[in-house]
Amino acid sequence: MNDSTRPASPREPCEFSVNGEPVAIACAAHVTLLEALREELGLTGTKHGCELGECGACTVLLDGASVLSCLVLAQTCAGRQVETVEGLADGPGLHPLQAAFADLGGSQCGYCTPGMLMSAKQLLAAEPAPDRARIREAIGGNLCRCTGYQQIVDAIAHAAAVMRGEPA
Amino acid sequence: MMRLPDFELRRPRTLAEAATILAGEGPAARPLAGGTDLLPNMKRRQQTPRVLVALGEIPGLRTFTNGAALAIGAGTTLAALAADTRMAQYGALAQAAARVASPQLRNQATLGGNLCLDTRCSYYDQSEPWRRAIGCCLKKDGDTCWVATASRRCVAVSSSDCAPALVALGARVRLVSREGTREVALEDFYRDDGMDHLVKRPDEILSAVDVPDAQGWRSTYWKLRRRGAIDFPVLGVAAAVKRDTAGTIEAARVALGAAGSRPFLVPQASEALIGRTLDDATIAATARRVAARAKPVDNTDFETRWRKDVATQLVSYALRELRGEDLGAIRRRF
Ligand SMILES: Cc1cc2nc3c(=O)[nH]c(=O)nc-3n(C[C@H](O)[C@H](O)[C@H](O)COP(=O)(O)OP(=O)(O)OC[C@H]3O[C@@H](n4cnc5c(N)ncnc54)[C@H](O)[C@@H]3O)c2cc1C
Ligand code: FES
Ligand code: FES
Image: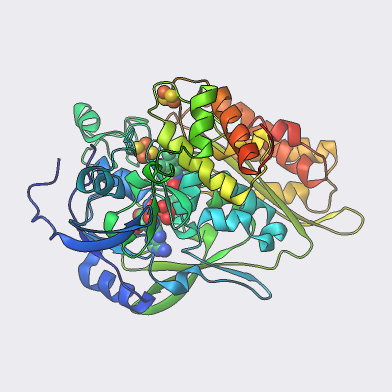
């Protein structure tokens, strides 16, 4: 779909960190962080939905804040820290959020799950004990067409309790 | 994948450098702040700048100071703004910022980008093939306004939440170019023209927003939209009043957003409020006069007739909240 009447912008080297590991890619100005993750780095855990900012499927953390990777230019990530769903698990051990989504039916087709998990991760980093209203607000930018959201809210509330060290 | 068209990306480190690039490149260059308006528009080929000047690495745009007045750097994110304790005095702005889009978008979106947001319309905010299928529209590549086919003017709607809030708070914006800095009252920053809605020249950068001291004022923002998250406003009501100890209104400013191609102040509201108290009769009379100024056209969500009717309600909620009523339960429905 690129405008063929214009010369392609040069591929510029771009270094940033993904899930704690340094990465170096070369990309044109128009490449989004979502495209860089999926197509340059093979990290297809981050999903593409609307690609217009409306669905949240592409949510990642950039310097700790949840952002929509479909609306971030890869070149503007130089020197910054990106966290994706691939960085949640610790080896074979699921992150408490992942475990709770799996156990409580927070994930059905799974398409929204990586984005939901990253929004939830940002919430719990800032507020370890959110009430259900706050949880709903925090996932307000993530659409799910399957679950009806209740199980997702349950899963986040449960994971929050586990992460606070409370008996489940 | 829905790809961006190609462009050249510049990443200046100072405001002066950014102004020089914009002056050199002319109107084919555009500032890029959070990108949450510009990048979707570029993906849909509504806007196709040749050069993007990223403002994110200019530290000066993120300063936030409060002396006698509040000076907010244009690069301040809406999330930072909504969370800042200094905003307590500026209720309308804090509420507007907190109600824009979604948490992720507020982490990216800046105040400057929100004030410069492109106008919106259901015939314009569509993919390129969709727009081509109807022969495009007045605002982009066509010659008909499909909302008002007899209209010579584009009626795309100003959809910023922070703009009406800041108009009610009497804010001014600073515009920086290579020629220097000029200041414009926010209410004069907009034109009633969906295609050319800002008085800002293409080479000017909005660097900061100055909000006068709100001592003695109380303000609020009410937003009408279909869902409680993500959606743009279909109507925004911002109201600010200053009352003496007896409750008599000394000064008042009510502004409407998403009710035309620009956010605007309603002088009739100030006339209806000043010298009175916020009693039921005053609120009802004011709400009627404000709603009469809201002339929604059929270019966004909801039925036009209903949007006009509900304007009266929204204004009265805002004024009732300002007199101290707890409208939390109603607010949660919006
Ligand atoms: C799904 C979705 C929902 C949304 N909902 C809302 C909503 O409810 N309410 C709302 O108000 N907005 C909404 N938006 C629009 C947008 O996210 C916000 O308005 C945001 O604040 C825009 O800021 P930005 O920094 O991302 O702007 P950008 O996209 O970077 O820029 C927007 C425009 O402003 C210009 N610009 C930016 N900064 C400057 C500057 N400092 N000086 C000069 N020009 C500048 C750019 O050139 C561009 O033309 C929504 C967007 C999406 C995708
Ligand atoms: S793919 Fe990014 S918000 Fe939908
Ligand atoms: S689980 Fe299918 S979209 Fe959420």
